[in-house]
Length: 169
Image (cartoon, rainbow, N blue to C red):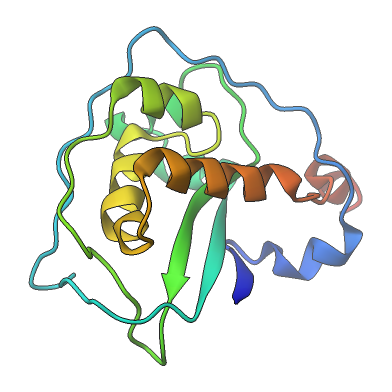
């Protein structure tokens, strides 16, 4: 089984400089917005395909917030006083060629407690719902096990010191 790592925003070139990530801050509020259902559609159809590996996808939060600062759905990540660096976008099952499994079974909304448990890794309740509905349901496991596996892999990564990279420019 193969696991690959996908990182957005052109950061891949800096990976050989991997060191422990700088400190970041995440405080989970008592209430978070409830996600809405995420279901297959004409543009994102259900695809039942064999899994050939997995991709652990990360996002660089400062770039995301720069582009989405005024978006109300980005409030927790970008306007709450929290500070994020690399965030976990998701754990995606890979398929053969351009076809990967997605939306394998319908799913209920994630429990609020599960969202709170993982929102500091994936700082969006809606993105958590989306990742479970689109990718996690294809892995033959529970939402709790899917998010535990993805956040465990995410926690084991060593990240480049982005503050040092920025200062050296």
